[in-house]
Length: 127
Image (cartoon, rainbow, N blue to C red; front, side):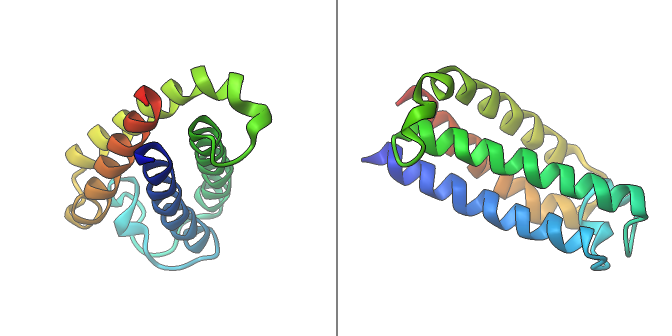
């Protein structure tokens, strides 16, 4: 049961990150909350496109976790059994980057989210 709950928490958190990335791509002036605050305000066009690429990657991560937990995409189960470890490594890297960022705003908001993503993906992976 905890595996499905962890997968749902992971997916909800990823959904929040996806909404944030879509907002950046749409031109919201929240650049100081991402990428170490390198692009305060609105992102330049290339970075806005990169946000869309991130959305696709983040959605794939959620699909892997949901599949591994047995909550969705049962046909992906064998792939998800090993791919979930990529999600854990990705989440660990995101956690480190969000903890060491120079942007206080980014660190305050996204470091806790990254830690929760790491913990929930790890619970699904070892479950």
